[in-house]
Length: 325
Image (tube, rainbow, N blue to C red; front, side, top):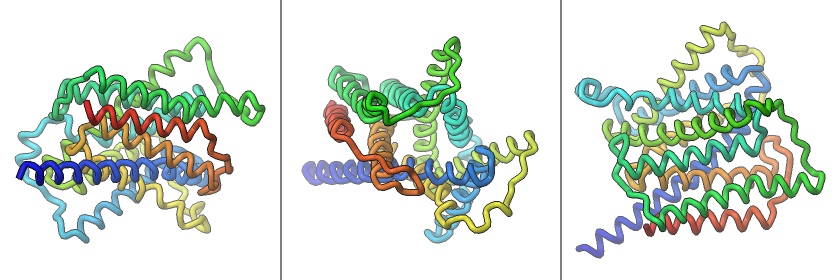
C-alpha cells in the first residue's frame, strides 16, 4: 500500500513538472504575441487589456465545456482571507513593471531581476508557509540547488548576451539614469516577488474554490477590471479597426496567459510555490531559446549556444537538488 502511494505521488509530481515546463515554454510566446499586439494598437495597456479579455472569455468557455458552474459558496467570500482575491492585481503589477523596466535596465536585467525576485519570494513563501502554503524549510541542499538555478539563469541570459557584445553582434540601447539604476533593479526584484506571490495566492484560491479553472478565471477577471479602470482613467481608446487584417495568432496571447495562470493554480498545491516558480522559469528560458532558434512570431533568428544548453542542464540539476532536500 505504501509503495503504491509513493508511486502515485511520484507520478503526480512528474505530471506537475511537465505542466510547469509546458506553461513556462508558452510564456515567452505570449510575450512575442503581445508585443506584436502592442505595436498594432500602440499602447501596452490596451494590448494587455485585450489579452486579458481574450483569456477571460477562453476560461469562461472552458468552464462551460467542462460542465462547471460560475458560482461558488458565499461562505468563501465571508470566511476566506481578503488577500486571496488580489492575484489578478499582482499580475497587472508584474506586467506593468516589465513595461517600465525594459527601457531602463535593458532586456537582460529585465529578465534576471524579476527572476531573482521570483525565486527569493518562492523560497520565503515555502519556508514560512505564507498564504496557507505547505512549509518547506530552507536547507543547505535546497539553497545550493537555488544557487545552481540562478547560475543557470545568468548563463542562459546574461553570459550569452555578454559574448554577443564581445563579438559585436549585439547593440544595447537603454535610457538609463545611472543615479537611479539600483532603484530600478530593486523594483525589478520587487515585481518578481509579486509574481511569485500571485502564484501562491492563485494556487490557494484554486484549492478553496475546488477548481483550477475557477481560480484562474477569478484572477483574470480581477486583472481585466483593473486594466479597464486604467484605460478609463487615462482615456485610452481601444482601436478595434486597426486589428483587421492582422494574423490570427495575434489573439493567442490571452489564451496562453489563461493556460499559464491555470497551470500554476493546478501545480502549486502539488509541488509548492518555490519549485513551481523555478520549474516555470526553466520552461520560460527553454521557450525563449526556441523562439530565438526558429524565429517564431516574427522574431529574429539567433542560434542556441553551447553555453545556454549547459546552463539549462545546470538549472535542471538545481531543481533535482531542491526536490531531494
